[in-house]
Image (cartoon, rainbow, N blue to C red):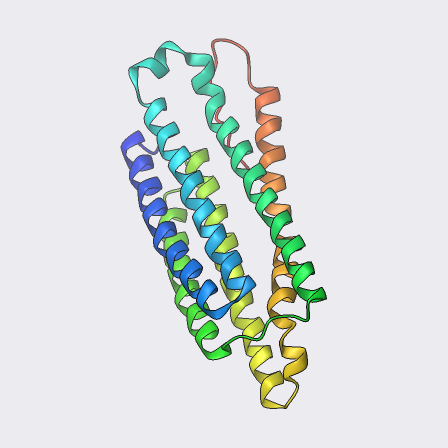
Length: 224
């Protein structure tokens, strides 16, 4: 079983990694005027805040006061995971609406070379973080939730690479008018696809809360 100290170290690693990627994504997204890069950066920033909550939760579960409040300690991981799922789902919904508005406004023309470079760097970083955390995720529901966040971020980065590669091809073949729609389309596709993961996280956590015994037992709150 994973020790509380190892759990906190992994969550801290996840938090710092997500913060660095969030700053990179937000800065480049604003510079390139790219919705999908902003989406990636915003997701990473939300991940930082949510991971910080998980870190505080892990610290609380290892504290003496946690042992005195056994029922709350049993239910707290599932409550945190349900909240994380809700926040990520909300972010996907807002991003979807923003992308639709951008589509109606004629799309976005951006520097595809810089966007592709960002996508590659971000993808490699996400795969690295996912691999490190996944290797230690078997015993902690909070850490399992972190792996799901990093998996989502990695796939977003892969989608960025694919989308901007297609946009670059369209521009090369003098179809830049269509390339301008690649950015918001990627956000729409990513939002629709990724809203499933946080919703499943939220529903699984709520189910655990419903089935968690009221007294004198331990609720692992693990997610499928």
